[in-house]
Length: 334
Ligand SMILES: NC(=O)c1ccc[n+]([C@@H]2O[C@H](COP(=O)([O-])OP(=O)(O)OC[C@H]3O[C@@H](n4cnc5c(N)ncnc54)[C@H](O)[C@@H]3O)[C@@H](O)[C@H]2O)c1
Image (cartoon, rainbow, N blue to C red; front, top):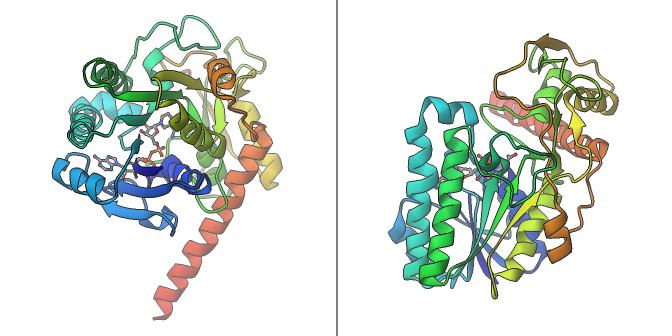
């Protein structure tokens, strides 16, 4: 298929692009680089620098490249920022998202895979979370993702659009070439690795008195390659139907302390830790069931082991730091 990946220069998007190419799809990235990195886009993919709000540019790309399906990963995704500045999130994740859907509608493109989030569940009533559980986002980020999911549902009814909404928690790890480079970084594994190499003074653990196996919160981490493969797999249902799938590690999850210990073992470095108070609204356990996508689509995650996830992130980070250093030495030498 000819596929457009919006947000394909971002962390997860760049790995989704690698997997689309591996699956034999012609792949074009559409990204305004507000957060993404041009160098993360695989050389074999096309690239268009543009904003989802630019419907005319989207329609031009759709027509010229005969796009058949869209994977929409372009969004803002910082929970704290969304609480401080909801307008920014509604504008980018909903208004810009609708601009994409309308451009698709005008060009009669009827297939979309959407990066949703576990934040649509808010604080779940039971664990692991399943797709039919209560939807009750507790922040504007989750609300905007749910608003887009709801739009997809109504666009299906009225215009025959088929969608796959993938709800996930924490993407983690790296492929050979692409890894996590958010600014600011809020995700645990890169934060821990940055503390290991001394790029930050310490990692904070928020609360050590939860009713979990070591007192720290249990969270769900999924390897970014497994996640990317699920996006490509989800394209296969879109001729026939729409669906919503959770993507999670499926097992017992990992505690914050287990992540830090794994990083310490993998790097061989000491990781300074500061134990702080619990944060309001942090549930003890947050994990997703992936049974539905496993049963219906045969999704079979290969890299679920925490150590494998951390090793891949560490390998990528060391290469990235080396490349950055080489670049700065070259520019000093010039
Ligand atoms: N990282 C996670 O753990 C996680 C978990 C659940 C859901 N998600 C969702 O997955 C998607 C990708 O996450 P990520 O961590 O790779 O984020 P990211 O910030 O690395 O990537 C997002 C990309 O979208 C682009 N973008 C944003 N707004 C745009 C616009 N209006 N027009 C064009 N491009 C735009 C950015 O430049 C960036 O390249 C997001 O939609 C996010 O909400 C991520």
